[in-house]
Length: 107
Image 1 (cartoon, rainbow, N blue to C red):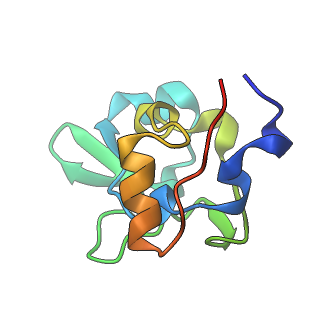
Image 2 (cartoon, rainbow, N blue to C red):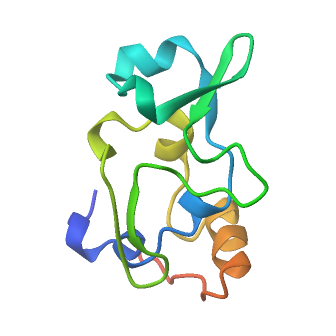
């Protein structure tokens, strides 16, 4: 993977403030997520705190969307966070919602 400082995600955060980040409840403990950063979404489904609202914003997101952001739980982030890639469909939709251009990602 490219250097983290070169990632367009470090100046974005749109996905963290667009989607409900839901996952199988046991993943929270397996990844070491703090209990105060996880909410129950359904009987066997958890979500990142702050993302289960009409205007989602993950409680682990620090910074200003579209400027400089960081995930305070990056090493422990759940599967949905690991699946979004710079420039993919989910990224593009999230960035559009926040008025940001889609990044050009070179392989």
